[in-house]
Amino acid sequence: YVQGYLQGAHDDAIYVMQNSLMLVQDFFYFRYSLPFPHRLAALASRLCDEASLPSVLRTDVFIAVYSAKPNFARRRAARETWLTLMAEQALAVSHRFFINAVGAGDPGDPASSPLDDVLRAEA
Image (tube, rainbow, N blue to C red; front, side, top):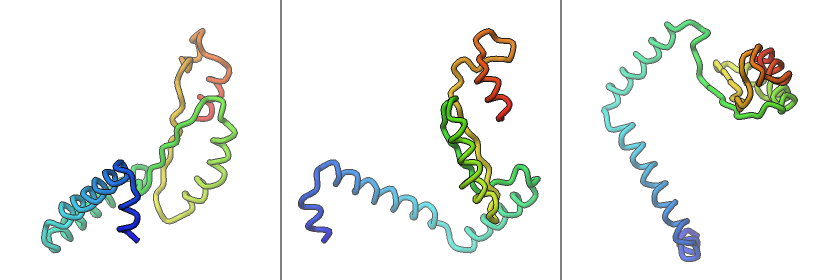
C-alpha cells in the first residue's frame, strides 16, 4: 500500500511526509534520551510545582478562539455547548476569545461603537 501511494504521490506530498517523519523521530529522540529515573524525577517535581499553584492559575488545557466583533451569538453558543462540557471534565480548562480590536477604544473614545460596549460587557 505504501509503495503504491509513494509512486503516485506528488513531490510535495513526499517532502511533507519525510519532514513529518523526521519531526516525530526528533521529538521521541529528545523526549526519551534521558534514562527513565531522570525523566520520572523531572516529571514528579513538575507535578509538585504545578500542585502548589492557586487553582485559578492551574490550567491543563488552554483554548484560544479567534473571533470577530459581530459574532456574539457564535461565542455564546460555544460557551453554552462544548466550552461548558470541557469545564465539567476533570481537567482545568481555560479559554479566551481573541477579537479583532479595530475601533475598540475606551468608552469615551469617539471611535468606540455600541458594539464595543457590548464586547467590554461580555469580557
